[in-house]
Amino acid sequence: MPTGVPTGGLVLGRAIRGQRRRVVAASLLGMTHQGCEALVPVVIGVIIDTAVATGSSEALLRRLLVLAALFLVLSTCYRTSARITEGAGEHAAHRLRMELAARVLDPRGGSDANRLPGALTSIATNDARRVGSVATVISYGVSAVAALVISAVALLRISVPLGLLVLLGIPPLLWLGHRISRPLERRSETEQEHAAHASGVAADLVAGLRVLKGMGAESAAVARYRTTSQDSLAAALRAARSRAGHEGAILALTGVFIAVIGLVGAYLAMDGSISVGDLVAAVGLAQFLLGPFQLLTYVNAELAQGRASARRIAEVLAEPVAVEGGQAAPAVPAAGHLALRGVSLGALRGVDLDLPAGGLTGIVTRDPAAAADLLLCLAREKDPAEGMIELDGVPLTGLDPDALRRAVLVAHHDADLFESTLLDNVRAGADGDGDAVAVDSALRASAADDVAQLLPDGTDTLLAERGRSLSGGQRQRVALARALAADRPVLVLHDPTTAVDTVTESRIAGRLRELRQGRTTVLVTTSPALLAVTDRVVVLEDGTVRADGHHIELLAADETYRATVLA
Image 1 (cartoon, one colour):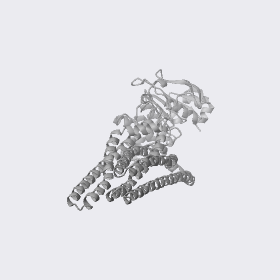
Image 2: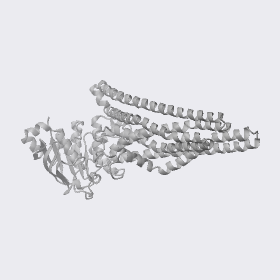
Image 3: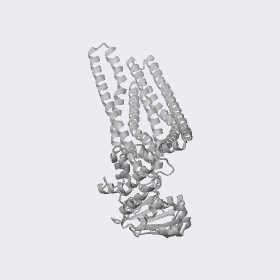
Image 4: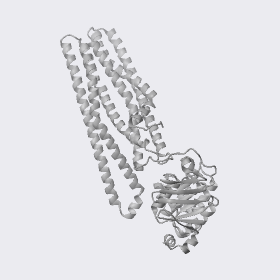
């Protein structure tokens, strides 16, 4: 992506420049098409004066052949130009979608700030399509202007007053059209914002549909979406009214202009200044001019909406990154020694913590905010406000975020599954298709192999509704298997078994310790079954380390700890 802060103008400029060859080719073909179409009434006028008026069959045949050639050229140019222009728009939209996807998936994060996933989807589809259409309509606009110029030249040859009328009348009409399009641009941007928000809310509600049904909160959810959808509808209707008004006003202006051309031509014919053929050509050109003017109206409207969408895309591309990327990469394989030095962020207050390489450490906190902030730091989704975190003696801020996450995997509690098979979900975190032995070991350690046995096609069963066809415990086991199959040197798990029954949880705890032997593993949890297999447990309270010891020792000596993990 180019350096500098993207703006709506830059986004539009890049979309057009990226397709400049197609735009130029389509513009040349469009100009040829419009030129031939403008010459049709001129040739008809010549036929009337040189063949019909004189009764010459030979002259009539020659002029008709010229007319047929004009239609052949304009038809061929139109088809070819339409294909190229549509291709330019689709390629420009595709390039924008890829650029947006790269920004959203940037390991440094930040693009999703204050935006629902559905809103980002709307920007990457609807807005990208509208900006892509600008590359399409540019050639239409050039063709329309060429048609106006050719018509003006033809009218000048017929009559200087008629030609001057067109040449002097076009610029004010174009200026008025631009001024009239300004309200459409503003309302189009508002419409897209409301539509994106409605898409985001809809995606949010669909994702939590089962939870809402379980809580009996369907009516509240429907009311929330109805309000959002009504706002989007109102904005869309305002934009539609603005577009209708814009097109109506432009059509009225061009109608008056064309009528004036016709009246002036009729007056000149009655005065004898031009022939009957010239009058027919002038009236034909006046009627033909309606097409280019309507085309310019369409182009103006598309440009207005494209500018509004370009600004929305630019806002996503210009969003500051959540963390700055370093240049270094961890050793391969990383030893896995993590150290927190005076780390403060949100609920964390000067945390000092040493997590030795190859150790299995439990971290217990009653404050969900402290757990969330710790995970954000370890995943480097956010950098500490104070202090630093080191991996094998190297500060995380000096490491490339993507390379870091190939060494350190933080598996959040609310991990999502994908609309794919169970096996594909488990292999999603592994490099390539993942080692078959590692995948099988991960399935066994997480007890996800038991889940597969209950499914009709085993591990090849498609998980519909992003895994919501499974129970909560089954989803957790598949998500845990995915994290284990990734086989990272450092693995941080946040409450991976909260929905799993006690017997299965104990089995998972023993297998987890066995599978992760010799690699650094951190369990942020209050589960006694998981904490029982750890080498040590660290207790966070009020955002700092309050206790450190073995699970059994802390149960016996620390009443607060006992109440937390046995509650």
